[in-house]
Amino acid sequence: MYDAVTLYAKALHSIAGQPKVKRVDCYDGEKWKYGFELINYMKMLTAEGMSGGIKFDKYGRRNLFRLEIIELSKEGFKKIGIWDSIEGANYTRTQREMTDTISESITNKKFVVTSRLGKPYLYKVEGEGLEGNAQFEGYSMDLIDAISKDLGFKYEFKIVKGNEYGSLNKETKQWSGLIREIQDRRADLAICDLTITHDRRTAVDFTMPFMTLGISILYSKQPKAEVNLFSFMSPLSVDVWIYMVTAYLAISLLLFFLCRCSPNEWSNPHPCNPDPDELESTFNLPNCLWFSIGSLTTQGCDLLPKAVSTRLVAGMWWFFTLIMISSYTANLAAFLTQQKMGPQIENVEQLGAQSKIKYGVMIGGSTYNFFKTSNDSLYKKMWSVMESAQPSVFVDSNEAGVERVRKSKNNYAFFMESTTIEFQMEQYCDLTQIGNLLDSKGYGIAMPPNSPYRTAISGSVLKLQESGKLLEIKKKWWSAWKSNSSSCEDYGGSVEPSNELGMSNVGGVFVVLIAGCVFSFFVAILEFLWNCRKVAVEEKITPTEAMMAELKFVFQCQGDTKPVKIVSSPRGSLRGSFLQLNIFDRLNSKERSVPRTEPLSPGWVAQ
Image 1 (cartoon, rainbow, N blue to C red):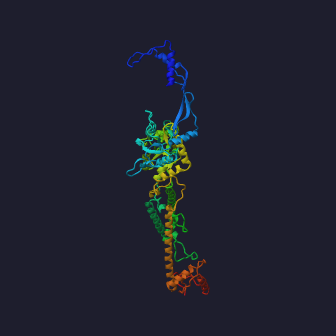
Image 2 (tube, rainbow, N blue to C red):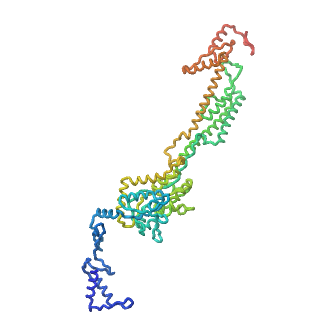
């Protein structure tokens, strides 16, 4: 004020003629004729005053002065620097002193913290009579609480109107949501899953990121195929299995009938006898069944047909079994490995190259702006596809996008932040993350531009990160919503590590093998008991004695020959349980003692 009055008086005395000052009337339109001359003269003056050098520019604004910067502290006002119009601010205290001062000023200060509702960052607690911060809990609440305990301030949470993150209206140049709350100074801090972007940093300040992330793809898992103990039978329908069994029985009966009809299938059972009384065929009904099943299982058989007709039937059966077994083997491999297949897409390139699976983003979010402003050819193409898609692939919130992915039956993919995908995967076991991150960014705490508390809060975030507290808070809230439902067992991983088959897939084969072994064991017991009865009758002993004799031989477990049982019977008879090995020697010695005679007619016996 002193410098202003002094300069005015100096200019007034310098005007020639000592102008007379008259009373000014605000309602009188007459101007003082020396007014403009006095102002122009003051603009040209240069002087030294109590406030420093005095000088004005052509607009009458002072441009040569110096100000002292003072700050109110606990001890009162304290000079902390000097400011002038040429050099700007020049602080006389160190950065450490400034940080300490800010830390002292933040103590016991109450911050208004704005946020938005969204699990797991912040959500309302169910209950009556809850007020203030007690109404909310979540990751954001725990993070601010940890920072407040470190710096010593108090806080109050308020939910932003509309539950919006904050986007810039290109027409009005106005921000919405959390960013607008900070700009209008209705809140001191904004915390949630708020991504740090270039546009947002031009409007507000951010602390260092408290969580690093990137854009990725949320997709639904392929459900596991139902485990079937007899899945080895699945490659062929029930009708085909019935037809195959019918064909097997029909071919066996046809072969048996043809063998009985064809003379080429009957042969001499005793090659040394040129005139046998009887002929025999090896293709009886049991052998026909054995031949057919051996061909069907590609194991072959020691019996082969001789007649042309039977060979034709056998050849057609072999051709039939070749086609069926080859088809079964190929279809079995495809059927059992089909459930091991992962998702239909594995990365963003495959997603962009196809048109069957739709994909979208949340309107107004950082992911939305990423695709909209990207210069990458792939992302520009995907943005064009999303814009032109009908019905629209855009959603109003991440929750709506997650719900659409779950209901789409693998026909919709959703782009969102990787940390949110991790949370959704913990909450819903039918979701998975596809591919790598499309970019790298972070979540930060927003505050007004040039906030003096940014350094202190960023330092506290860094301290929590180094101590592992941030990771601890994240694990707490991500695992708090982990699904414990048994339905998670119905879904496999996104990609199977190998294609091996478990017992749940092929266990039915073992069941069939065991059942066949058990059945054959019982058949062997029946054969053993029947043979013991036959021996008892022919040997004229009790069945128990015959069984004990047979069991004694069985459990010796040594030797590969079995003694012949000689049976008392009429001369020349071969009756008995076993063939008498020395009967031919005895017959030859008797023939040499009898004179030769002419051959007898059939039906006559020598005396």
